[in-house]
Amino acid sequence: MKILKIFIVLFLVTNFLELRSDETNDVLKNKILKNIRCLICQGQSVYDSESEFASSIKLVVDRKLNEGLKEKQIYQFLREKYGDWVIFDPQLNKNTYVLWILPLLLFLFGGAIIYKKIISNKSNKI
Amino acid sequence: MKNKFSLFVVVIFLSFCFVIFYKGLNTPNNYTPKVNEKKNIPTFKAKDFTSNNYIDSDKIFEENTFYIVNIWASWCVPCRTEHPLLMQLSKNQSIKLVGLNYRDNFNNAKKFIDDFGNPYSRILIDKDGTLAVEFGAYGVPETFLIDNNKDIIKKFVGPLNQEIINEIKLIIK
Image (cartoon, rainbow over all chains, first blue to last red; front, side):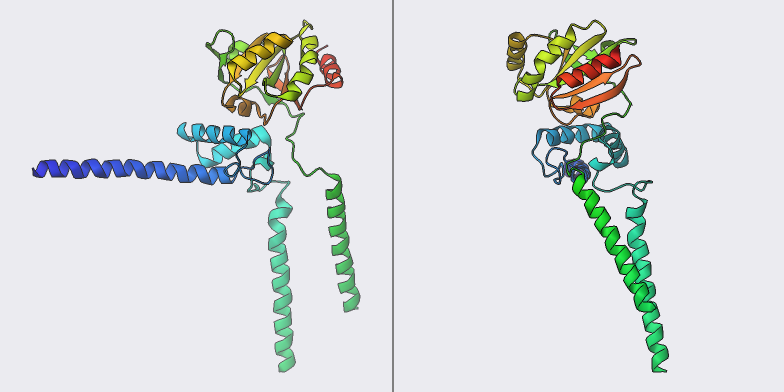
């Protein structure tokens, strides 16, 4: 009887583990699909779109994940086919340097102005 | 002096914004992937329309021959308008036409070919649209010109017209 109980517990645990691995795969798949732009209904992600293009991309992503490709490799595959624009997250390259660096520069510039103001206010008080 | 500098910075910033927005007005806001980029043809396995057997892409495309890959469907209205032009192009001996039947019903596709003629040397079935993704297509009709080195050298989004046919003829000459 004890052996049977252990067997049932082991059976359930392994089955739940399997469910869990499927769930992680689905989470990753949805994450990828949310980051791919639908080229038919532009502005919508493939995840949200019901277009034929979107449903084909969903199948392709699913197939690539099953083939063992990583998230970045799938993005790279789609970039090669449709260009950088198909991915919502822009990659750091010579065309997007300004996009990535400008907010940082503005932040530093603003910070410097605030810092200068504080220093001058302090010296005025003294 | 300080005020003048601030004014100068503001003017520069506003001019910069004006130039960016003005340029943006002249560019279309819907994106089309690059059409003149040279790419290798994808490797794939596809079902043949007539024999119903799977065939490798290596066996479809031979070297030293120009190919046209045309993505079409019986439900696609623009495909009907470009079909006579494809029939015309199929008479050219220096190019072979491969059709990619996109997300279609077999009987409807067969009727389409029977009614309007078959310009293709081979038709492949793309039931779920994934083969079109391998080519980098996102709709129908789309046409790809493949050179004698098995490279995709040009892509035409939308229905073909006489101007495009002349361009293709000029390239394959």
